Image (cartoon, rainbow, N blue to C red):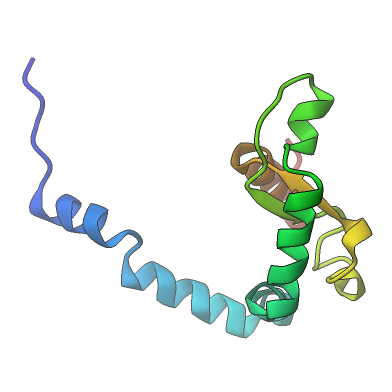
Length: 120
């Protein structure tokens, strides 16, 4: 069975990445929610960038994968206690952990579900 070629819109989306509407929606969400606005300011700060680099140098492997016996390089630095729960620990090195993309996505999704009261 032949494969259907991508439409022009699909090709443009691939070239541009996320659509402008998605970025606008994210921006409006951050403006409405003070906790998200605070988190955005933290992640843009030079202080966070330096702390993130320090954590990745200290612990270059994913801590969650390592607990399961898998060696995977870390690409993300995560707050153990999220910024929504403990904004006072935003720049505390003891409250950070190195994670790979899949582990970070899984942890972040679980935190969002918990905030919404959804169990899974």
